[in-house]
Length: 93
Image 1 (cartoon, rainbow, N blue to C red):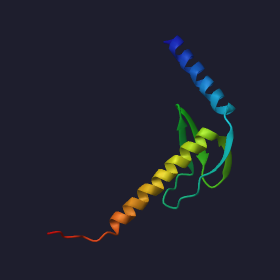
Image 2: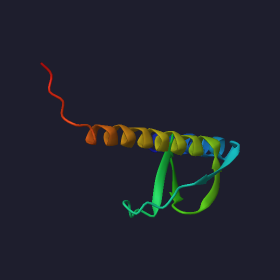
Image 3: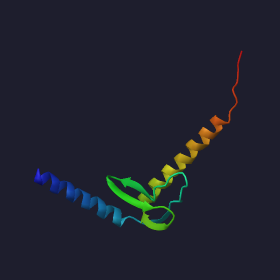
Image 4: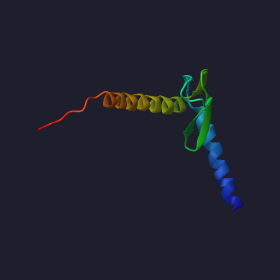
């Protein structure tokens, strides 16, 4: 068991090192009046970045890419829901 924990720790350190070596991008997660969480967790291969809302931070590019992709998907889903909510009932036949 102890060897397994040591191996997991070494793998985690290697992933953290890989992440730290990545190019950086600026990420600013906007404040959200509907979501009172001050911090947004972004996970890459089990490594969690807890990014505060409302401030710009330099983060590894993959962390910014994960957030941006998730945000784009959220906006697209909200658009589809809005279109569906505003649609009138239609009767055929």
